[in-house]
Length: 72
Image (cartoon, rainbow, N blue to C red):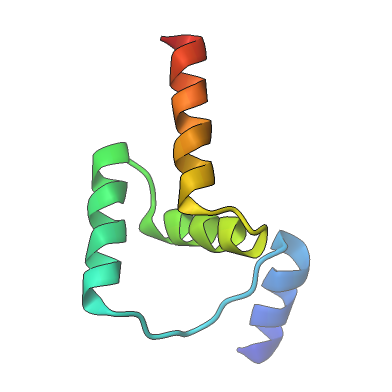
């Protein structure tokens, strides 16, 4: 099985991990995914990507408002 995980990581640019998160955090991501029709795992990955990039919640809100003003 480790060889399969390594192959998937090499081919897809992602790695399979096991981690523990608070139940409330997981519930929030699952609820948001249900509203948007997406995957909670994708939302968590995007949140982690934004954190690594140094993007704050204020940055996300600001970007969302700008986008809404342009399209709305």
